[in-house]
Image (cartoon, rainbow, N blue to C red; front, side, top):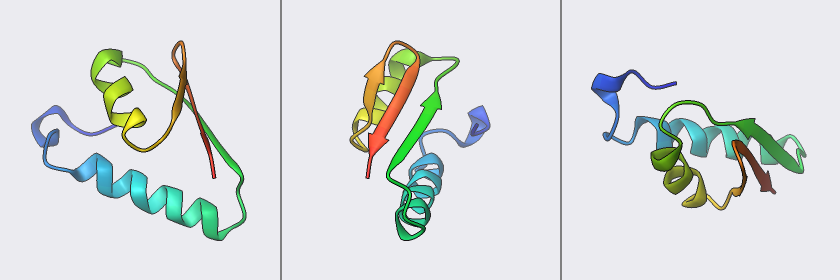
Length: 62
């Protein structure tokens, strides 16, 4: 979760990119998560990384 004062500066994108890269290098095939908070904004964010959205759940096939 990124502090509100730091949202919109790309911090979350950098962190998620690194997490995806690390997971992929470790042989992880899927990443699952749950969204809470401003889901409208989060849906756009996660879709930009290729995540599938299922209600409040997110899933990325690597």
